[in-house]
Image 1 (tube, rainbow, N blue to C red):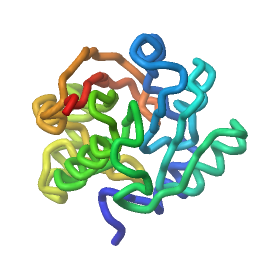
Image 2: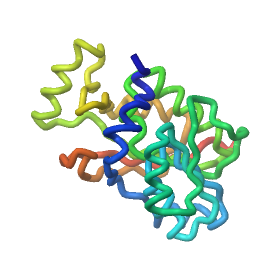
Image 3: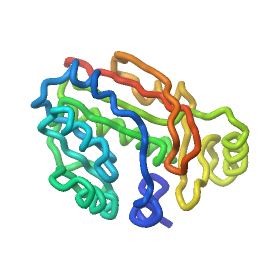
Image 4: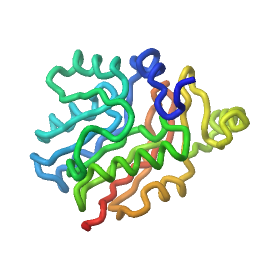
Length: 215
């Protein structure tokens, strides 16, 4: 069985046709970064965010993803983006390579605590001292539909909030768990937004902008 933290088969199949909707904080990023800042979209999918960053004037944007199908879609829809296929960790970049790293609905694709912790360690490794880390993801939802599927799938996965969604296994995190994952960074701001999920259902997401230590 493939890893719960990768699910490459899903993202090269059914998942490659999904559309993503988390808003990109372009105004805030422009206020904090120069146009020549090096930005990594970690888990870039079909490059939606990379394209928006480029249109906003950022010239050094790289997207990485484990799905060849999503990256091929990105090159078809927005030729010229720097989208790269990666397999596992560490990513093929030296320490402190980027001024900012974005994780847009990436943690929801990682079902285990170990995998989520490893992802955040890798993201912070790649950031220069004082770099920006932006996380946009799903806390636990409180509607009946989500509560029922959390309870239904908890015996299988051993974690409340991990659930099957079509062919994918997803996770919604307790807010305090997101805070623990970001321990060691300094939050700059936090907000909640309502968005459609990749399956078209309304959901509340949390968006956090944080800064890594200066030394």
